[in-house]
Image (cartoon, rainbow, N blue to C red):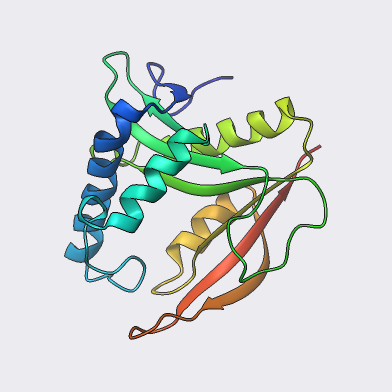
Length: 182
């Protein structure tokens, strides 16, 4: 696969030793979102201090679902988690085999280098390797809609909006996207 993000990046399965560095990437994104006043998406608690989020990362590593885009010196540029089932019960199942992107994140140190696009291409390549014809992802659909627009630029088509009720906090608006592979 041609790597347009950064020629030195490659993707590998994350290991348990990567967990703290993956959490640091997620904390950096969290700090950036908070700095922008965008707390509706993930709230304000760092991933590394939230036991449920730490366990989510560790579980995905243990199930061989989490991949990292790394430089030649093993710096983590981005994170991708995929599985053959959607992780949510707030939208309908695909009704056919799929590859579901459960997590996609780019280190703020690599902003503007198309690491996210590189990881989407990796997910599509993984779906092809598995013989799957559908890739789906969900994302936060609030604020100014920039995240939804970005997924559309990557070739995804909106399937349907959904809402995740959250106790003690405003509901979380989301959008389910799909990409059919040829």
